[in-house]
Length: 225
Length: 225
DNA sequence: CCGACTTTGTGCATCGCTTCACAAAGGGAT
DNA sequence: ATCCCTTTGTGAAGCGATGCACAAAGTCGG
Figure: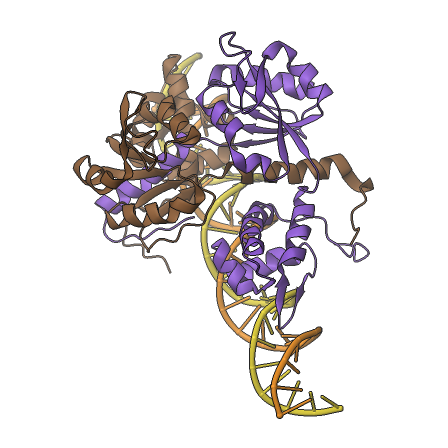
């Protein structure tokens, strides 16, 4: 039922989207090392995936390879960046400047990929006014103003669990539709708002499950990366 | 082709394992509020999943519900904890005590679920000797000794990207088979070693992809090519 | 210009997870 | 004891992702 008039299918599978940043990282490394072209086999190896999967993923973006040769590294970097929306500048606000929020503010991986930390906010008068990573921590009261005036479109929640839903409601009311949640709670948001969650303790629990199985049961090899 | 000889199918689907911690968190909250029993509908709501999925997930552990009534909260907490291996104590070492490692060391969610930070290690003489979260930071040189003597079975890698593979090789050589990797690299490990990765910038990139799509919609000028 | 070689892009079979829908199982009221 | 109501546990259909295998498409040497 797909119309053939749309030569470029804009419906990229979610699983593919999740891997594009992986390819991008590998490609950036190659570009820095002066590699000009790369085969799907080599790139797949560097990204830790199957080469057929890599080719199918890239085919969703378009036909950017050359048969018999491979992919032009620079060109592919550009195409993936554009597809992911990294050719534009994203203003990010971090709410909650505890240990984690502080680490995130200082994390280099954000800035290096088109993400700019445009605001740090916290409710604790103790930390408001501090300078972290060159930014002044502001009071949560000005949340809406910061979002609106600085064009913040992505909010990172690093608050305690109890505060997360309330802050979430406020940023959604302020028009934000993309949230990265580090608080260990299930956020409830209206349709159209995108929430991704990162829960450090969940990852450990999954590891513990497999570790227990390895220790106790017979031979069960598992490798999920 | 699956052997029916295994009466209790110990092969719990990976997708299910990844959700068990979610259910556990919701159940713990209910237990604290004094809830005695819960229906799959309510628990699924609290965990943010579909109720049929929840029931199928729990059915992999055994038949722990009562038809017409629901699940006993306490009992289910115990069963899930046991299945995840949280009834035992896991010694975790954190390698790399930068901003992120520090935040992880202070993160309460670890300790509260059977994970004990048994070691903090770093290569930088500047931070070695510091006290963080009640622990003394040790030099990476004693990595193997710490792992062996304190029974560390899970290692958290929070090193810079360049150091990650080398540290990984060392901890694997020391017998560790479960690694939580925060460094933005694809680790190469032998079969039987379990690596889970958390990449903060990847999560942001996925959000940016969807945000771009929302912002542009059908009118967005795309193919500049 | 041709033929051998390389590598992409993709049709297809398969697999695992999700979701629906309902029979089976239990509780409580009468 | 029987009936009705609630909720579980699961067969089966549906759906998307994966991986194989190969034809198509390009390069390069002669």
